[in-house]
Amino acid sequence: MAADSSDEARFRLLNDFQRNFPLVSQPFARLAEQIGLDEQAVLDTVSMWLRDGVLSRVGAVFAPRRIGASALAALSAPEARLEEIAARVNAAPEVNHNYQREHAFNLWFVITAESGRRLAEVVETLEADTGCKIIVLPLEQAFHIDLGFDLGGDGEVSRNAVAQDVLEPMSDGACLMPELERAVMSALEQGLPIVSQPFRELGERVGVREDLVLDVIERWLEDGRIKRLGLVVRHHELGFDANAMCVWDVPDDQVSEVGKRLAREPAVTLCYRRSRARPHWPFNLFCMIHGRSREAVLAEREAIVSRCGLEGYDQAVLFSTRRFKQRGSRYFGRAGT
Image (cartoon, rainbow, N blue to C red):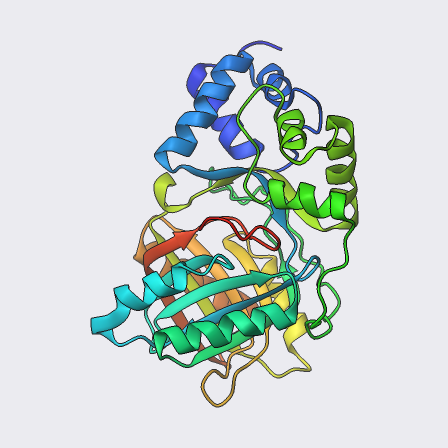
């Protein structure tokens, strides 16, 4: 193919390969062929983005609740103790995202663990450590899952607006997975090494041949345990400084249809149904909207509310004001934060 300009090629790399990362021995060479750069330029660019925080990792985004247990959780931290409490929450290796948001519940974080029992233990430990009551909001139904982030702003990222079945309650039992697969997943949770043959190096870390690593990852993509494989971007570093978690209280017999409608909106980057935590938290429909400014997000949300007929439901908007932690899920790997 004719080589794109350097800037165009790098934009394509960042925008187009947040998913469909090549499952071949030398994936960065394959990417280089497709965008008109050489392999070393791709490796150098990706390494720079990781160093500068544009990417959190190159690797897998695992489907919530398909492997172990996960839940969104929140607490109300006294303002004077917010940073201290956030640091205590961050210290738990099972916590992968932790944000301050504009609400009485001002600290929001995601917990992943190998079982529902382990997740409950993490919550209990955090409550004892912080002195704060935690509300736990498990995923009940996914309407739009994480398929990447459209940097062009034209809504062309493929969407999943077909609701999954309502999920069963989280199991207390540990995730059943062969030891070899657990080892591969634990290594993959850290992200791929940025080298010419990353799958071979990942396999060497856990004593598994490269071809077996590729086979296992391909199977996980096919069965839905991995939602996407590719570059995982950080929105803030790319200029999307505003993000709002928008929530509604929708009757249970309507929420699936409303959620599917909401998920079709190009500006919606995530859309889920979650458990309520009454009386403290009455909302069950969640979506995320990102934008370059608070005003842009509010304008988009107002238009979405009108198009989707959401005016009549109790609702709230929780803007993120600070990011305390953001990294990939750790279902099996306990090392590091």
